[in-house]
Length: 128
Image (cartoon, rainbow, N blue to C red):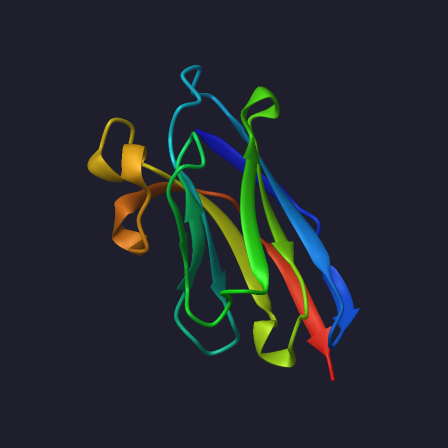
């Protein structure tokens, strides 16, 4: 599975961005997808995940109420709508997909170890 993120950029505090992640290489397209982020000097951290149907959504506490994950399966694309952005949201944002047919493949997960496929990331910078 190949994942390509886009949509990052520079935005002021309180602004919004929408990230996109296009997936290719798995014809079933029925897997969960997730977003993680890594700020300078910090470990990569979970942001949000969504099952293929969108019936199960998970969010990190730090983004609940501000970020929304969604999917367009016809386009093999996952989105992360980010509103009311804060300087602490500054990070490289990564899209991830689980190992095919693993438990996380169907349910999503907040754990990095459950994801096998990763994009190269897109930079989000929030100025104060």
